[in-house]
Image (cartoon, rainbow, N blue to C red):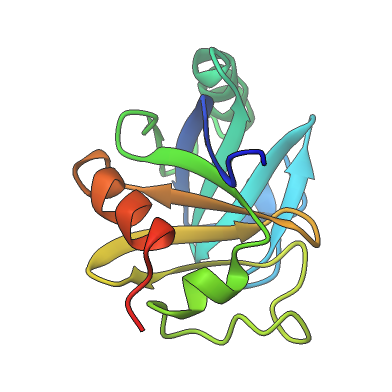
Length: 154
């Protein structure tokens, strides 16, 4: 059987701007994700987005955002060292054992994302498709999260 937890090497860039209309991508709805040039854009708050691309693309993402937002009050940071990304297959029931948000597939659907906690760890969840949930977790908590997902507390 294939491992249901797969670390994923990704570029991660955090963008904050007061005027979302100046962004070079369609702004996702709250707790939703969209795409921009083949990258995922996750809504983190009213003025904050996480842009996720393939490994090594952080500098390119930062340059594109800086060019698009030139002259605007903004914050654009490579945050790839801030979180480990893990793809979890068919794991919503496991995540639900330690997560306060409703992860029932009838309500938690592909394209949704949220900042929440899993057990004692802060995480960002991104439901990529019907089977795959991408979990972003701080490096210091990745062992804890892996252990908890492999042997959930009941």
